[in-house]
Length: 215
Image (cartoon, rainbow, N blue to C red; front, side, top):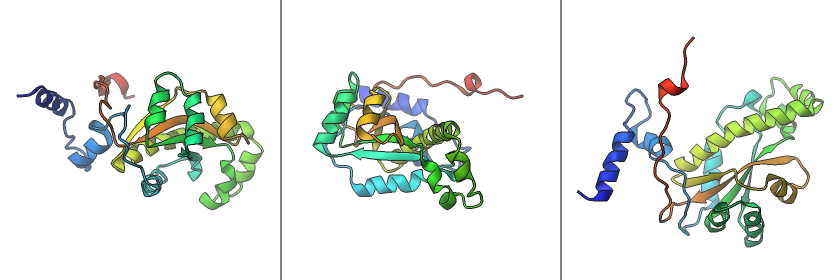
């Protein structure tokens, strides 16, 4: 038995199929148990069709009052990519330079403009958020962060790998890419097909007993 076979067998043991779920084995692995954070990528392009499909899944995740404040800026041009790389820290520079497409995931602090359209049963919420900038920013950050999780799963569902990163100069990214101050960067995500040496060794996960209590 080869070393690769041993490692594959060990990983299979570490991620048993959860038969209690309607979600099938392949979907469990694609989205969760076999999915990994990619650190290298091939040069296979990520198409606009991929990105639209990712959005079509992401948008269905729940947010407070259906406000959907997540915004995404895709950095494709060489000039914009070079600028973003300068704001990344450490090894994130090389990862960002090499990925087929890079997304700046942001929260829209002006999300309330869409309230009459996305939450028509309470159009007055637009005025509420307009007069409460602190509450508006808190809601934007919290709900866009929820959506960022959906976004990563949608990337996996599209058959791609994601490399989310928090290691960057947020002030520099915001002032350069979002100079009007309305969008605020939450994370940078590299997207593509995993390349050679894309994965670190799988790290331990906490068990149910470690994270759950019942009262």
